[in-house]
Length: 269
Image (cartoon, rainbow, N blue to C red; front, side, top):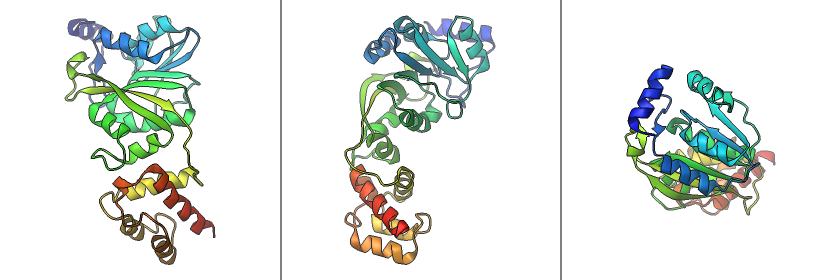
């Protein structure tokens, strides 16, 4: 689909692309074909697409499976897709109940990249092929010690294998975003270590990465109340646990889980 074609269809629907909604519409049909091929979709696989927009990717997904569901926030775009005979949920992907699915294929709005990735992982699936802003994709796949290693690296990485599989220039969208994109493949897997409390682990990671360039012991001591620890409990933790003199950005998910589990033990003692 050409830039002019996308602009014309949007105008006919009364839609002006919204930066706040992350409405950058894919125009390169070759990229859409590539994403669908990479997703390896069977004819009866349950497929979910979030943010289908005008349906460039959607049309190809609908040819690959008879069980496609799309979730679109913009009411006008949702109605346009319904008129094409598609199964459409109109709503916010961060609030609407998600259907069961085997494979997710989407050009995601940049604003919800982190939240929707974790929400999808909470549901479980076989494979996801997702397009993100390049910088976010680099965070998603980063390893301990990498410049891009961050909270999302940990929270997605301990329960999935994330790989950047293709770069997509900003010229492939209308309107063109300010940055290039990357396509990421996500394959869920079970972690090879124990987590005493998923909620506690998430909170520990959040707090430590808010002090990512400080030693872990300093972050824990300064945030002991947020972690549910008294000063004595925090001091006991920092004196007896390894990794305390390292910065969070160097700690693996397994090492962060050791800290989280120790916090859980002290809380429940």
